[in-house]
Length: 220
Image 1 (tube, rainbow, N blue to C red):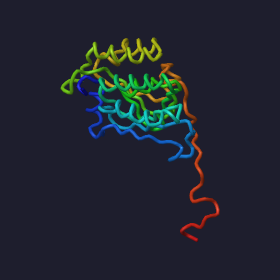
Image 2: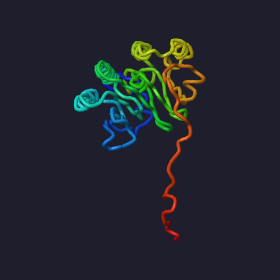
Image 3: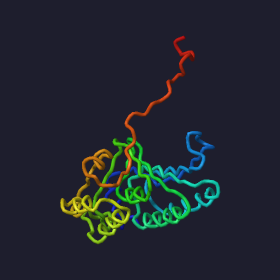
Image 4: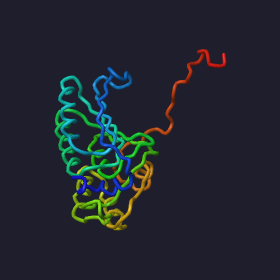
């Protein structure tokens, strides 16, 4: 039901967007992941059967893990599947903690934002990319449907997004007229005070030297 999503304009913006992928990771694959945590890497378009896949993945881990971290990099997707995904996350939260993450340089656009705000701890990079626009009924138009846009804003409102920010989106025509509002993670926190992101990631990401110090190089 991509035609009923605000991500429809997004499809026009990113014609190379791929179907969403869900990849679970634990400490068995990455020793830096806490032993009680399952990381769900969610990339690409949000479309069926993502919600069912998420529920099935968690069923396999719920007995041994108490936390899910959803690592998002998505241009949005189906409004209907986003609703189903939010319901699935709510069910998981009844017995476990769910946090969300958008890394530096990653995108969270449109319907992705509604998923992101379902986390208890909502961490994002200041250099992450965010996109907001109104919901269109089909691909033939970029004129937002006010009814569908209201439903989307309610998703954000229910998750505690700032009412002042939501009102600004409407008052300035960002979600009621054709167009796209590009915002960085830093701006969401420090300019708009949107309460979408609850924690900004540190901008400095240290890395181990490569090749390791003391290892022979090609010139040696």
